Length: 249
Ligand SMILES: [Zn+2]
Image 1 (cartoon, helix red, strand yellow):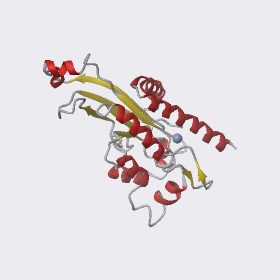
Image 2 (cartoon, helix red, strand yellow):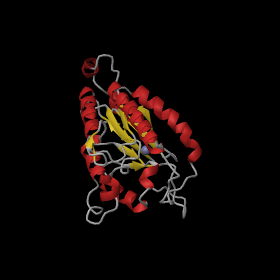
Image 3 (cartoon, helix red, strand yellow):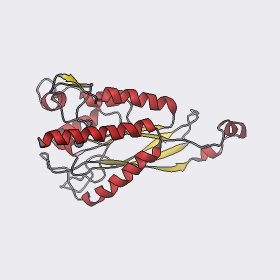
Image 4 (cartoon, protein in one colour):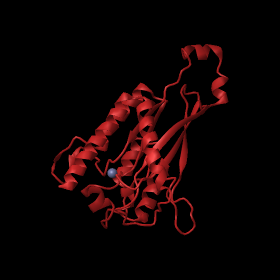
């Protein structure tokens, strides 16, 4: 019963994020990230070494714009004029708690569902088409756990667990810019995280997850996404991303 309630909450959460996606502006997502990161700051001591953590972690990605580059300022007058006011728009897209939903189909209930990364991919494509060179796509964690596809096959089962992880494969296809580890990424032990890290064509982040042995970071902490708005192969804007893992969600 509790489980049901939780799942419903997750659906609401998904919808909130998809709304953020469709709005296609940085402000709502940034606002959300700000709020989440303040919750996360108290969790800085958490470690990555408890592989059975029903306890720990969730996530947030906080994106902040940094600087415009010198190249941007050196633009010639006619080119700048073509940009009208010179204002640049960044679209920050975020997903969270996808929980192994790849297709819009529940293997558990044998029926179609209104959630899945395939559907999100369509929304991402639509948003990108509105801002081809100014879009950033980030996942906030709890991606590789939650369904038969992940938990019973690709995370654990012989004959499957050595193959490319389908969720990461889909994320590579969708050209994610970064993923933050969620608490449920730890459900199957650290080797699974090492594996998805090696498969991902984007950085996997958790700035507040450390190895107990030497205090070093378990995965990366931050990344910088360089945006080239005018497609002239020079960076116009750098977007800094900090990944923070929270204990629940
Ligand atoms: Zn979750």
